[in-house]
Length: 495
Figure 1 (spheres, one colour):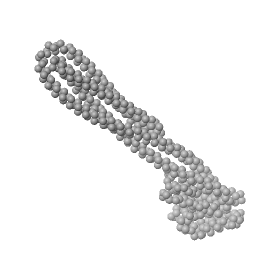
Figure 2: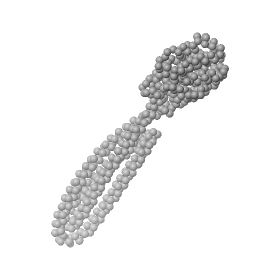
Figure 3: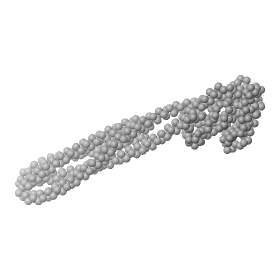
Figure 4: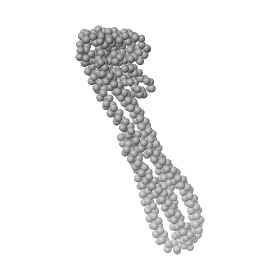
């Protein structure tokens, strides 16, 4: 690693150096943010920077513009190193007598730098020196065009002011990025808390869904058993009915007179049964309306769930509230199921009551035709009830299928939320790495600025040679931060 020669009187020249990374190296930087590498490339494409030179007033600042791009590392050769030493000699020859006197007082630092340039170096140092050979050549050519040292200093001073403005804008951008990083950290914490809440709500929903599935299975099994029992009862009743019908036909001749008297009573009973049937139909319509209302509520909850997934970033709290509402509605639906079970028990009781009445009518059928007619009506009613129970069984089956479908939709939403969470975590990691890189750069720039302000100023020729060493040390650092493989230690410049 090449040693960098300290430069005196440098104002904002430290913006050319990359910061030293004592902590872990940064392996990934977001492409959208401006990096030090891009700023270095823009500077090398149009201009070469030289630190300020001490002459008479000890505060003259200079920059020389060069119109050609610098060569890349593979294009550099050994001739560029000779151009560097020749440029340094030309600079020393064009300085004022005061500058030459300063060289003598300072124990000839320019000669020391030139001797260091001619000393044997390693292969890595040669590669670094070749990186800026073309820029130094252009710098020397631009300085040789001007005849007077005062003109050279004036041109360098105007360019240096531009660099100072660029440095200030860079500091402003750095402050804005720090604020943005703090805001992103807060947003990340908020998203983590909301994610934990969503996980808890999801676990509760899963447990409730499992309970609902168990309940649906038990209902299905009970309905199948009941249907079989009702079918067996129906067969027994039809067999008994046919046997009694034969007996009744034998006795119908004897009961004609009695039938005329009981005809009116049969009509009254028929009207009563008709009223009961109408009431049952009204009740069935009410149950259908309740089921439709439940379906509409389910559709409304599905729409709310879809809207909550679309607005997950902005309305996570509202999403949690909607999930709580869904839980309440599931509890309400369970309560409704229990009510329906109670109603089913009541219907069973009514069915048993009707069976008892049917047995009473069967005992009287042997005596009158009226009992026969009432028995037939009761049988029709029982068949209707059996059909209604079958309809209820199909309704419960449909509800079970709809609940399974809703569970699958919720599982798909869960996977979608997990994908969005992973994407957000990756973005946060990239932003954290970028902020660390910018903070390290800022710290190193502040240290270099303080170091340069406290050091004594040196002549123009020594400044030019020091600038070459600084550029040689900073360009490998930029390549290490951006193009290097993950985990590789970045190249640092020794101060």
